[in-house]
Length: 90
Image (cartoon, rainbow, N blue to C red; front, side, top):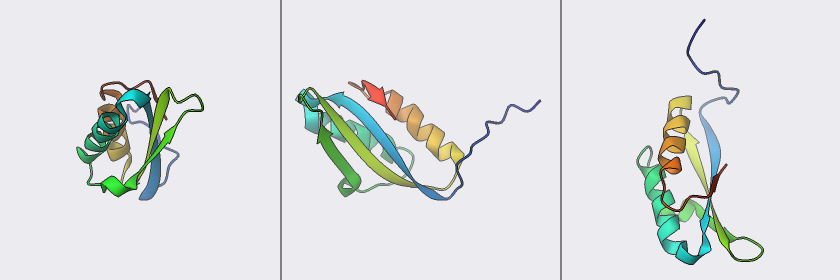
């Protein structure tokens, strides 16, 4: 039995990450998400898209990243899970 993870995603590809956090700290949360992704691969701040929840309590930060392999995707998720204020991650 192999311990390698199997990915259905074909690489290289554009991949969408979505991180949800508090709307009260909009700029700081968006900066932390951007910094987490940049720990793995360089992405322009302009690549971030911000959207508030219907009641304005939460902020969704979406970012499309060009990935070369599954390891990059896993490392980005690892760094995003450590972002202060993170409530939900897609």
